[in-house]
Length: 285
Image (cartoon, rainbow, N blue to C red; front, side, top):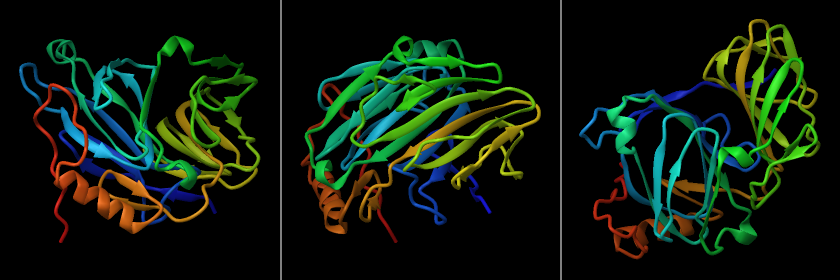
């Protein structure tokens, strides 16, 4: 039977549907965090929805929007507007701080904001690398149009094309529009895969997968739809070793994430230039 992970609703200034990590499964390939953000609207003249500066270690964030826009700023000095179809890849390594805010035009024009935010856990040999940032505009992300489906190859290689997005381990991330009365059988040897149903009626090996649910795929899985669907296929080669999560920190040991929490509390991270507000380390218990 296919492992199906239901969403957990979280409020982070706006509503997100959280799929990973889950008590059922921590990660799929390198994907250790998956949030479906929105759809949401934000009132003009407010800061509702802004995510104040906060830190990360041991992971790479991947931001991908369906609609709207966001403004990324980080402690390396990058200021980047993220538009639909583009990929923002921020590798935290040994530590980075960033904020994610809504541009004023998005608020004033009452634009819908919706997208997928994911984290990729880093292989242990590079989890303490120097932080970096890369932006890939929508026009460099390859797409494939087939008789029964269209695909944006966000990360990895599929259908004979390769994404320019560079990751620390072999990764697959596809945005798939599957046509009515059609099916798709992913073939990525050696990779662990899951499919997230953004909308539509979907079955995996004949078992229904509801909208906003994540289905972890067995080998030789067949994804099918009667009336059409939008899917995110995600995964990659499994990472060796355990991963521990504390707030926004991911690492191969509890000591590393605890040390990162103390470092943040004690002002040990470089901050985003020109910003003064920040999110404190949450208290537990």
